[in-house]
Amino acid sequence: MIRTATQTDLESIYQLLNHLEQNTLSRAAFEPIFMKNIADENVFYYVHEFGNHIIGFVSLHIQHLLHHTGKVGEIHELVVKDEWQGKNVGKNLLQTVKEIAKTQGCVNLEVTCNQKRLKAHQFYEKIGMKKSHYKFVLSL
Image 1 (cartoon, rainbow, N blue to C red):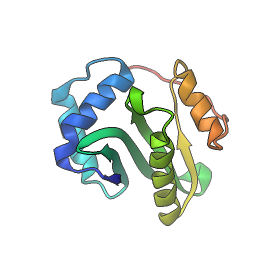
Image 2 (image 1 turned 180 degrees about the vertical axis):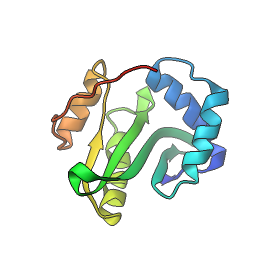
Image 3 (image 1 turned 135 degrees about the vertical axis):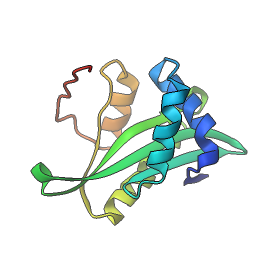
Image 4 (image 1 turned 90 degrees about the horizontal axis):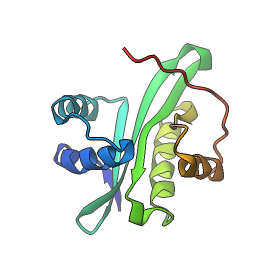
């Protein structure tokens, strides 16, 4: 079942994102960002549950972008527990945010994906997304 994430999902989402990043994120930094975003009307958090366990998470951020002359939905995180990959969990989460982006009047749905996540690249291409941009990052 897919549902809107709530504040009580913080720990499960934190654990999923640690897995995604293959790192332990700062819990002290994570929590205020999570709380700010979950209250933001332009940020949409969804979880996929099986029983009482969260097995997947997706975040959608909506922005008004000049170079698109409209709203754009960007997936910032999409993660599915390893044992649930290939079982339509990610596809269903993506479909959920795709519908939200349409409802919100977005002209595009975008995602940035780390170069090392080759399985994720295949997933996005399989569901119809096109590889069209490079992302450049400067650590501050």
